[in-house]
Structure formats: C-alpha cells, structure tokens
Length: 404
Image (tube, rainbow, N blue to C red; front, top):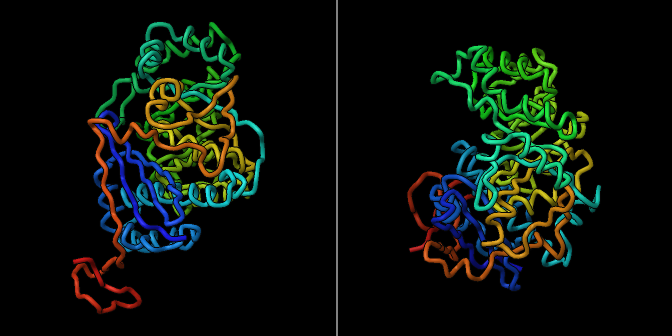
C-alpha cells in the first residue's frame, strides 16, 4: 500500500481548524486534524512533509514520524511543524486501522476500560451558551452538568481578575470578586461535582501562588496553566505553595518537552494535546512515560471533532487515564456539521468509537461549502536542507530532486 495524495481542508466558519486527508492506492482515506494557524500548517504539509510521504507505505508510522521529526527538528520543531506532523500521524493511524479492520485502540493494545469518564470545559456555541450562563447563573450551569451525569467541569475564574501586561500584580479584592461565581456553585451544589480551574498561562509565579491559595477553600480539583510551562522549577515552586494538584500542559510539544515535567513531578497530572504534541504515536509514549511515574493523563480538547475521536482511542487504551476533556457546546453544537458519526457521550462518559480506524469521516457536503478550501499534493521528492534546487545531487543521504 502506498500514499498517493495528501489533502488539507479548511473552512472559513472555523478558521483555526485544518483537516488532513491521506489517500492510498488501496482506496483507504485517513483523516487527521489540527488547530491554530492553518495556513502555516498547510505550508508545512504541502511544502515539506507531503513530498516525503507520497509513495511511502502508510503503515510505517514510526518511520514516517521519525522522518518528519528529523526534518522539522533541524530548524526547531515546535509550532506549525508539529501541528502538521500531529494531523498527519492521526491520518496514518486511521489508515492502519481501516486496512486491518480494527479500531485504533486495538492497535494500541486494546481496551483498558469500556467507557471514558469526561469533564466539561465551559464553552459556547449555538443553543449551548455556557459562558453566558455561567455569568448569569453559575449554580444553574453546574446543576445542568450534574443532571447530565458529568462529574467535573472546568472554568476560568482568574480570567475575570484585572491584570497588568505580564500578570505580575493581583489584588485580594479582585480575587474575591472573580471567585464569586465559584463560591455560588459550592454553596448551591456542595461536592456533587468537581471543579477544575484553568489560568490560561496569564500570571507571574507570585500572582499565581496568591490566586491558587485563595481558591483552596473551594476544593479545586486541579490548577492548570496558572503560569506558562516554560520553566520546570517555577512549576515546582507553585506546586509546593498550594495543596491543589498542578496540571501541565497542552502547550508542551513532544515527549521531550514533557519529560522533565514528569520526571521532576512538576505535573501532578499530565495534559497532552494530541493534535499539537505529535499525534497518536507521541501521545501514547507520553502516557507511558507518565505511567512509569504513577502519574495520570487527561488529554486536552477544546478544538475540533477529529481530535476527540483520536483522544478517545488513547483514553480507552492507556491504563493511567484520569478523564477526557470535552466541550458539550461543541459536540452538541457544531461537530455534526462536519463529521459522521459524531462522538457519543452518555451519562458523563464518552463511548469508545466504533468501526475500523478513527471511526469517523468528513461529511461529503463539507466539500460543497462555499467557505471550503482544499489543497492537494501528489508529487514525491526529498526535502532539500540547504534551501536550493540542484537536481540529481545529494546532500548526505538526502536527494535534492524537486518537481519542475
């Protein structure tokens, strides 16, 4: 089996999303996805990765991952390069599952569980305007999650705190004001639901410590990205200053960036974002590394539908899963517009995907939308490290042949 064509698909309505479809001579079409700076991702896919993948066997996922990483790493791999790699990797796993007639989780070792506990991150789309609901009636919003069997939700209480450009100063009165919705939830529903908090990486270390300590009385399940995950020692100092578990971090790319956070215990819970950190191949390795330190993972999701499917295969298979992030405003709001089937959430649990591969595909009418853009690559050549074309010559083991 060989790769014959690679497509990228973007739509104007959700301008951050980029889907990838990999076609094979066996008729299989693998689907992948990433989020953020799609034009840069498209450029990486079509200018760099696709020429190296056309004609290759898509089953050789480890070899192709290493090939893409080897190209990107020479210039600094984190960013659009890894988002592109992640989307391609998911599509390759989809092809592998389709060709073997198995869901991806069976290729990862089978099920560790038959359903996946979820938590809901507050978001808004269509009928579900949960961000606005939280402002008007935070206790009512929390009760709506409880009524659906959801056992935890995540909010952004510190976003309401005024801050200077670097988040260095934070006043006690502003913290108290920002935490009023949290207090209302606890007073209304008690411990019927867990509450996680995401700081969005906005704060300096002293400010983050002050906010975390102020929130401790409300028994927060975890504190996520109160500071940027650029310094392991700073995360350790934050961990030592609060009794709340520190979660990190969707902004970390690859096992190499996660390694020190896991080894030093700076991340009490590990949160990889599968469509940024290297796809299914790399997320499985990050989960295994975390498992050796008795650390659970909770895959990050606040993006598109393909990510949730890919995460579900990881989440159902790895033994050290804590729970899976979801956003009901998205899976009840707009995922149905683009994929079939949609994910199934029942009584606070995500059901494992059914069918071979990912278990979903882009709807045919996506390609008929007025705001859709499709780019295609179908020619093979090796990426040229020096940056000029000298047909027929070699640089090390890399041929510099390029299409006319």
